[in-house]
Amino acid sequence: MRNIVLLGLQSSTNLGDTLVFACTEKIIEKILASHGVRDLVPVSCDMYGEECYAALAELTAAPGDADENGVRQARKEMIVSRARERARAYITADTAAVVFFGGGIIKPGHSLKLGYCMEPYLRRANELGIPVMISAAGVDGYAPDDESRVFAEILNLPCVKSVTVRDDIELLKRAYITSPEIRIGKVPCPTLLCRELFPMRPRKETGVIGLGVIKPKKMAEQHPDFTAEKQIMLLDGIVAEIEKRGYRWRFFANGLLSDHRFASDFLQSTGRNVSEETVLPNPQDVQRLLEIYHTFDGIVASRFHVAVPAYSYGIPFVELVWNVKQTHFAKDMHLEDSFFNPETASPAQIVDRLFENMAEPPPEAPVNPQDTIDELERFLTAYAGI
Image (cartoon, rainbow, N blue to C red; front, side):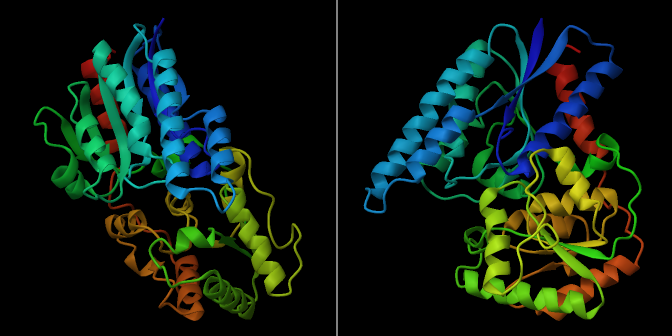
């Protein structure tokens, strides 16, 4: 039986990546069903795989006196070697098409060496003449380095037929895509379709505000002077402002242990108890993650895949910005006043905006999530023979 190989960060412990995969898989299944296709099935493949993630974790945990350049080179070689093996195993003569299911994958300089990992898959597809779509990807930066050069090469291979992005389409055109044969477009992240793809019971008021945490190192990517201590001070002020309004609060994470650990660090450093009343257990799957969002009257968070699903479900939220993808989303959705620079915004400003959002009906989306479905359907119709 023929297959469509879905590639991306499916097995990441950041469940935001897993949610992108789950939404894309459901969309493709619905497209195939609507066309009455029974001899073509989606097959999922994490670009890295559990063994690779485990091996990379061991390399990351190398002693502090280890040669940093040597560790980086070892990581790169490990990633490329495993990607080649997985590309041969998953992309075969039975593959009708390959779809990279988005997330922030066009990002040079990431610790996972994303460009080097994608390269074996794209070259394998190119060798076999298998059409490729990169769907709703995040585009995050360009640097005149080897990995950016790799991205520019592989994104212009003849097998690449369509590239849609969720954010910086201008950077994609300027720095990466040069082939006039490739269809380029901007579409919403598929997680904007969560309400339709993962229906939930209507929310009930709980009197609880969710505080979605992100590890200090991530927040410092855009704010290098915003130390962990300063982040704790901001959170402490936010908690005080929530309590002042007569609401309870509870921390949660999107699956990453390092994020979840920061919640406990905050509670301990501010003399508060660590319990399920103050921090929820770390979710292990996307269903539980989405259920967690529904336990709150409003949310203060930083992870991108809190904002997008929350918008889809009509859950009021505000975000602390650490990455350009949040800025693009805020602009696209006309929500700039709900996204804050954490170094300059006060706790009162942040919480005031959240409670204003809680008092107002959710705005209509200025973008059409159907565009994401339409572009996938156009690709599969044109190149996978559905």
